[in-house]
Image (cartoon, rainbow, N blue to C red):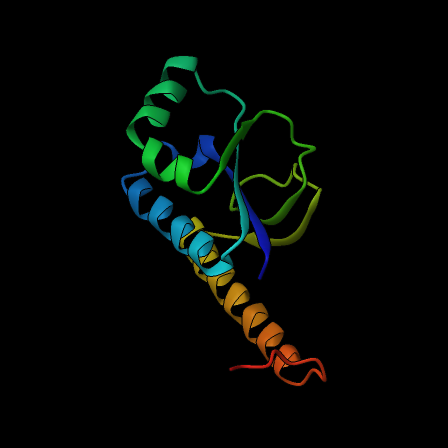
Length: 131
């Protein structure tokens, strides 16, 4: 898979005890894509100091997965995960439920698409010649 994006509401996950696990799973999704990937973190009511603290604490992971923070709910998202809010309408796939289960679902989707692309390539008449 050449690109992918995940949209999450940061307001709903920033105080969770398992935020490190969530971001680790996001990194796994990025690793599966082997290409363009973006984590879009929507937020509404977060105080600036809380956002800065979060960014500083998880900067390594956030930088590695190309993260975008936005209050604009019009941003396009490939896979949107949320259990609480339906205000995002510009997405390709949506998972309603727990973030960790949603990330697992997205991982399965990525693996399925990757396998399909591999099968299409292997059935192609224009195969790469190996030396």
